[in-house]
Length: 319
Ligand code: ATP
Image 1 (tube, rainbow, N blue to C red):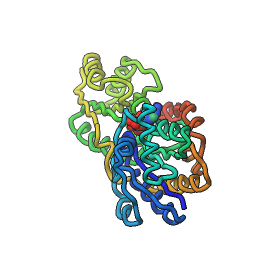
Image 2: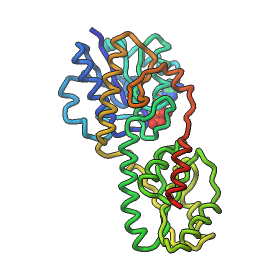
Image 3: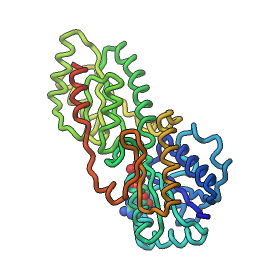
Image 4: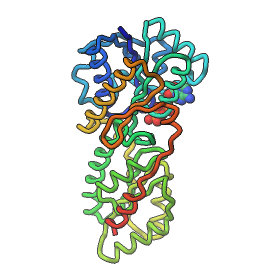
């Protein structure tokens, strides 16, 4: 009988709980023992660990955040920190680990596997910034949260005939801005992957104003730059009545969508099956709606292709 450890690490994402539930339930189904490690690698080093049972993960599939808590842990980036981690895992009789998080957390899992401790990664991050998988857990929920916010801002933007800049998360990845902007009917979408000129944004505003459109939504990915500064430049150039909304942490919370719950459940079960097959240093992903797995090394070395076709399509639709 294997003993599996599970932790969530890095930025939290809606759907992490559904993944924890899937790992715990499938592991128990297959006759394994499961330990939940609280607060990511930090909790591992500090021995903040408890055994999980079927009811530990009851009533959580619909809840945002992570019941195991998450954190960032600088100490785990050091050899000494990881050596303590491995000792703690051994002390609790844990044979292998499931890590739910982003690329940083996967690096931690890779380093553990290189120390001979099998670890499997599940992509839990709202940013959708991992090249090897079509979707990460949390992205869909956050996209829907942004669409909801865009709709509300659009109402008031329309009443007051204003231009609104809405800054969304995603770090260096423009997926949240692109897809939420498309679904929210934004006139302009600005992402880190595509160079933009303020004058082009202003020209577009002036053109649409000429044809009688008095309000406009600009979705800006946080990785591009400061929304307030951009707003000032646009006001200077166009004289628009403009407001800036930085959506912030509201984007990280909320009940996961059906898509994220199903994705997390499928990935969680695959992660356990991989460990039972004796696999290590793998990540689980989804490609063309099929659950896949890949070596962590290979997954982390891949570079993301930005969806330029969709980006260009938005330009057509927001003419
Ligand atoms: P997100 O980007 O969604 O916030 P992430 O997993 O990329 O998630 P990071 O802060 O990069 O978030 O990493 C989370 C934790 O993973 C770090 O605090 C650290 O404990 C561990 N980690 C990151 N990089 C490494 C590394 N090179 N070696 C060992 N551990 C690492």
